[in-house]
Length: 419
Image (cartoon, rainbow, N blue to C red):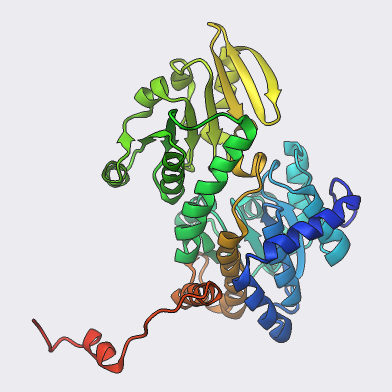
């Protein structure tokens, strides 16, 4: 394979314009870029990234490159690549990219191995496919790796399971767990971009429809609120009693999926788990139900079970597959059950990815500086990094906040004064 595998290099100019548009909404990353240019904190570091190949990601790759890193990028999802952006990274920045929108599973993993042929010192993951592949199939490169970072909830779950089993062989920073990541990216980013993807794929009115949100984590909270804002009647399904209680207190109907599957018009899974929508749910769904996923992997929907129940499958719109069941009902799967906000839309708005990718850049810097002192487990982003990103973001938005006086600081650190 050459030092890239993309759809078409001639798309590069369009990708550069898309990057420039996104960069306008990424002031925190621009601030980090200026420092990285001067200090080169990643000089000499080979970095392999497995992320969604979007304009926002491309701006992160530029920052890492300017910080001295030798960067290679591969896609973290077969349907999330923006082919013009991939072309721009190769053409304008000479960053090897292995990503083609719509690539099959074999190509997807061939691309992951191509990124690992870079023999990285640092991994940057969205879903832990790089880390998983290294530990299963590419153990010969482990000795050169100093650490990694992880972008998403699903990946953090996988990595923590590896750490608990004693299987994780280098430290990883859970970027997803930073407050400036999951409070904003997961809630506001996923909420808006998922609705965007569903509407683009279907052009069906949400107002007045029953919209079932599976999972009430930060992504589910954001999606439920945005669906309600579009006029949908939102139903939440949960397995965690605390989250279910929160959904009730937030004004949503909460019920088991067995009940919700009978009344829903739209379904969207955001759990990170397997078979959240299964055969028993498809058996009772309304004719015309629209099913999507905004969790990282398409295993949240048991599509093989649905295919077995169907007498016919056909593509009725781009990213909309219609499964006709033996009783004549039709169930529609959006984006092959993959991340609908990236399959049929453009992913999160740049302004929220600004904070997520600022965390990635600074976590990479932190890992390089401190890898020798870290154990082979999953770490949170240091609080001082989180707060610095929030401070820069507020300044860019023109928002000023108070600072504590010395008197207030003393009071908060003392115990002598009471009521």
